[in-house]
Length: 543
Image (tube, rainbow, N blue to C red; front, side):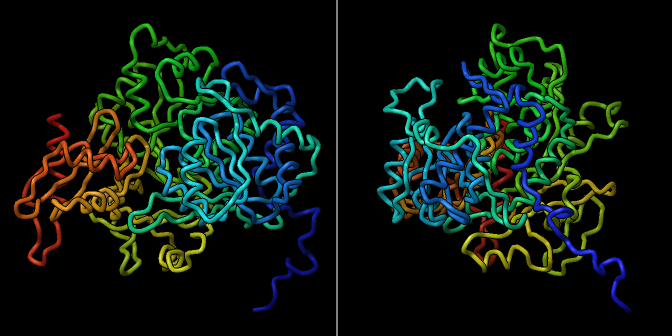
């Protein structure tokens, strides 16, 4: 077979080929709609002209501070304007953005700062004490910039971030990536064994998923997005970039509470928001004086455990159109959507709830989604019964794990990304999760490693054997439930073990229940967690 004639003398050049990057979305929004409202936060209102200028100032100031391509800039921030600016300003100088979960403990943050090689940390003043603790445990000595948010009631000791921005050029000629494969961000997984893994995302994937978000969630021009999803979760599922693509408005929310959510829904004309089931509980559980009557349908995207039938019905009655999404940090956030078929809307509520509980089909920018036998790498039958591993393939899959080639090789074995999640695929091609092979517990949108909780319990000298599984929780979706066998003559009760756990775990990782009982095992001694999950399910239902 000869050479392809269409490749002859038709080479890539700057006129016909540019690297894809979501940074161009902000440049376009500022040039076409400079006066459109980009960000609202309390008394702050910024146009796209201002948003773009401040992001360029940040890129310029970082460059003057010696930050260059491949350097890491970390942020320890809630959902405030500075976080949005970091999503543009940091990569605009060629650096890589590292968003830190504000709920982590100091030791975990220290590991991330060291592993990522952080050169700069931008920290909200509320979390400055936490950062001090973390830096005392690190080898890196980054430049620290405190950012004072006027919506925080605490005492601020000066706004170093604003002073830093003032030294930057609002007309800075920011740098395009050399290649769209260049890293734009690093996010750390919760980790099921050992230390967390650093997931590296590239400009191409961020560009594609950001646009995929808009298409998947029916996001039109000038949509208004309420930040109930933490931006430190997979870069806010790429919505910081999506909103510039649709020239929308970010409504920042420092704390996820019912009153400001309902006030924003009414006062700012919010059209879209994302969140774990706990956000639904907050909305539905609000006092009558707090709730508002919506005169429109608001799109609510949720992930994690599927909402119960009653919650879905109540959300619909309150004016929300709920869409179930699924993804991982390694897929830039959601890459699977439960696309709703018109014919399903006439089915009984129980059947609709069962259909909504399925994770769904691939996002438009994801090229491959399937359930495969991990040993043979062959697709399982599409019968909704045969369990296999959910696997992804495409441009919205991570570059790999930073400084961890063995984990990267294992994750990409056979030319697919292995999610570690177990599921089935139905005859219509919709995927549904059945278990998590890594035993991750998803509580309020946070991933909790059952192994990490078990390790904390095992440190107690009275604990002989323990096993941690997910227990259904009406507020958080899931919470850890620990089953414990004591050593002979072990003298410890549930209250004492909870105190012990509180000293070794972040608050959201705390077990909801500790059950002292004989732990079921196979003949080879392996703990039968499926039996414990059923016990935990019964406990959760009874609660």
